[in-house]
Image 1 (tube, rainbow, N blue to C red):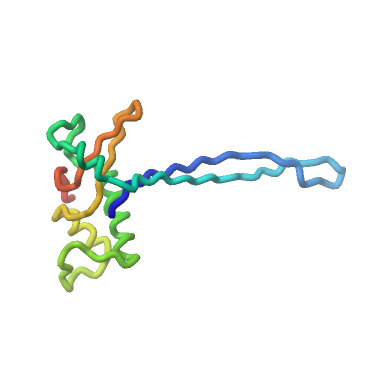
Image 2 (cartoon, helix red, strand yellow):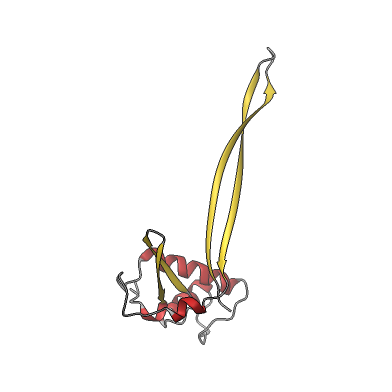
Length: 134
């Protein structure tokens, strides 16, 4: 089952006086606390029920940022042992080449979520997008 994930990281800094110098005065030491949360949408079926590629407000053109994000995530998955969704020729030895070929054939199993503002999002399947092959 596929999941859609959103990850956020927030940083907060606190000060504590722990160090002292030779004159007995306290100095501030900076401590950084990092909190990371990830929200998963376990059931993508609701997104797919409401999916209509005709009723879109954004262009179907995949941005270079979306392309690089998809290639990086899919190459990592393949490197960690995920099965490629294409027949891999013997000449392809690098995982990034395999991920690029999957994207070219529009077989990458991702759904792109675009932020429209005001807590509204638009979802795109890769097979419905126009991908530049640069």
